[in-house]
Length: 446
Ligand code: ASP
Ligand code: MG
Image (cartoon, rainbow, N blue to C red; front, side, top):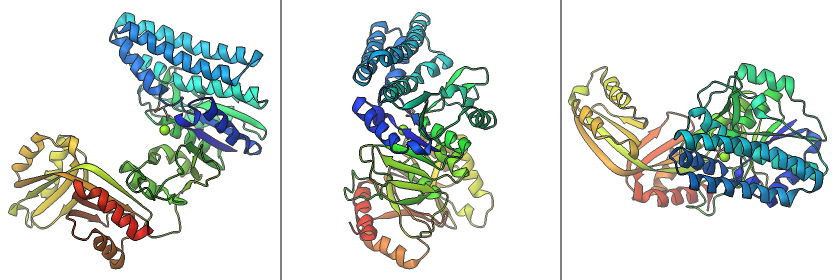
């Protein structure tokens, strides 16, 4: 069997939904399970709804609710007719009843409890999948709508519940029977506690759901259908010539996603990766493009993808007391831990330590604490250039090409060798985009 996950833009209106279902129809003989996100923007609107309702803005909350209803009803009317329309409409109505009651409850109480939040915010997926199911029936496909809350079992950490894999895998394996010729449809993002209370898995959770279903069912592949041609060599907004990477390993994808490259979050595909199931990233608007496949390992070596991360700050501590002293590093990192600040990159010499942290974490208090250990120098307006490629940077020649391409640009800190995959350079923020263009041209020729 095969799992196809459609993101919000892939189901945002009736044209997109038809496009998505045409993609599913092509793999009907592979026993497809469709996992869908909410229509794009709906999850954000539902979050807004909880804010409006719980802060007593009744009129605005009701307006928003009506707007959401109208958007879904429009798709329903375009997609279905007759008896199928009636049945689908009833299914949608059940969700609106629930969301309506919860909204009135929030208005009355002037608050939104964690479990109400999850029930409201997760309902976008209930709606989109009901619409997809109706359309499948209208097109004459044999389709079954599955409620993900009966399969994805979580703890009760509302808003970002953790999946309990034991019961989840068992329920999926026992309760879901994919077979060729039939389309199964279920929701991403939602689950329920062992007591049956609805939960959500955290933003972007639909990819996670897809990979959980795929792994529990032993799928031959998990396909993540989105609005880009897979994972690109770099951010096309900075380098328009960026190209699709045909194959990438899990480790490379992980390095990239940390830098905010538009790829899926590595944690969300872990269940599929553990089972060595290939995860494809494909474009609903360009379905014949092969996209990118993420594999446990790839045989390739060499530069693969480049990304940049703005908003870095370099904090350097210099102290002669560090010379031959043990425990000095531990004391420095203790300070960061005490302030709950994540350190991105580290470089050390005999008497100094430099770290880069995200600018939003630049806390005055940390500097004061660090000053007790030595001289502290803070350099703002920095950013990180991240060059990812398996075993790409272990040869002086390749490193030479990187620095040759950067030419006169200032490099503040280099991190190499921490992983075989990643070379990171901390540079001036104002140089980052140009630095990215230069190395991209050097290694990818465009
Ligand atoms: N609809 C949810 C979100 O926007 C889950 C998802 O799309 O992955 O975060
Ligand atoms: Mg997403």
